[in-house]
Length: 468
Ligand SMILES: Cc1cc2nc3c(=O)[nH]c(=O)nc-3n(C[C@H](O)[C@H](O)[C@H](O)COP(=O)(O)OP(=O)(O)OC[C@H]3O[C@@H](n4cnc5c(N)ncnc54)[C@H](O)[C@@H]3O)c2cc1C
Image 1 (spheres, rainbow, N blue to C red):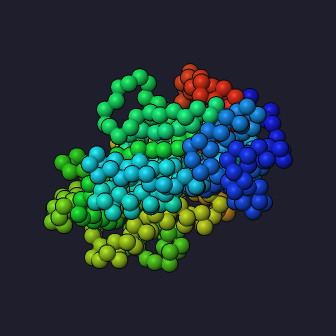
Image 2: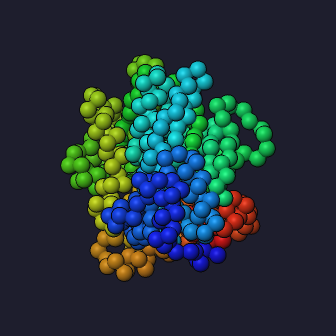
Image 3: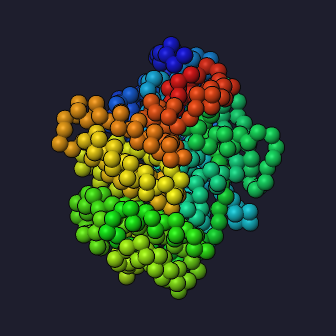
């Protein structure tokens, strides 16, 4: 059912211009080329045939109703920072960019709620909330990503141990379904048991069920201080073994990041800045917020004791804002540093926290088995492990030949340990060949039924996650 779409013709372009205004429709070559990929590594390029930039939900509705009637595929797109190819228009057709729907409609200081259009960036939301003394506490790595994209990938990031993921912050949405109807689910309230929860169903659906056009988000209050403890270990196993004990303390850290020496070396080369204690094999970064520095340092003292019991040799809190920024900067640049280093893949497995150490050992064995180096880092506090198989000392053909079976082995190992294949980046096209490892066939069939109920003509982001 994925093929057989109508082509985009000159008439289609005229129709779209009549529906949403000529200024909101483009077929400029360089713009089409710019929307042909997203941040998925090793992605092939698929330019759309036409770009539409609807200014409001009415325009989204007219485009989707038209595309459904004519059977033309539509790919929604936020900032294109997704790592799984979800925003790549693999069937050409219409690329629906949300970039003009960028209003922060309301920051409701009494209800601790923000209402935004989907093209608002994470950065803009953070700033708007903070200007009102409030806080949107999620930090999924890339601040130029849109809130619409974050919702559609259920983005996670570094603050998830304490604050959770996007799913926990979305109170309601307005969305346009492929037939063009505008639906509303949830709102600026916390409790809701009014039928099936369509808000939660749409979150993480990667633009395959509806286009989200307005989002109501929960905000919180920001604590005054935020510090990081950087702890080097003699080996990765020891670092990971310390995590469950740290989490048994009464206070919950914002995040616990783990990294090994290989990735530290790569990022030092990329940023041309050294990290402290880089001679050690593995590192934990424990991020904590509190009302006072004393409160945080008390907590860090207890964490340091635990880490030393697990073989840590040092522990340091950066002595200046600059040193602290450098640490965070380095962590945020892992992906870009590996991308610059060599052709690579991005794996986003998740396992129960207690199984990270065992998973790390298995990944090392699989890396040896296939002769492909694999960089290892991740959000240790929530079990979300990022892995980069890299093409080193082998041809592209050899790398490509080994990549698929290596990834399948890694996903099977994660699932056998009680985990799954994507913690926060989604399936898109990149992880689609492995979807059946993470989800059983009867469950995929239910998902197919849901997709058909929203999108009987299969025009919205077809070919993503699974085939119909
Ligand atoms: C350097 C770097 C670091 C990153 N770090 C993290 C991290 O720590 N945690 C994390 O979770 N992710 C991370 N990401 C991935 C990425 O930023 C997130 O997946 C983000 O949520 C994507 O947002 P976007 O606006 O770029 O969406 P896009 O890439 O444009 O789209 C993502 C998906 O959502 C769909 N979509 C977008 N907007 C809408 C809409 N309004 N309605 C319906 N469907 C829509 C698209 O069709 C696509 O399937 C990182 C990416 C990079 C490049």
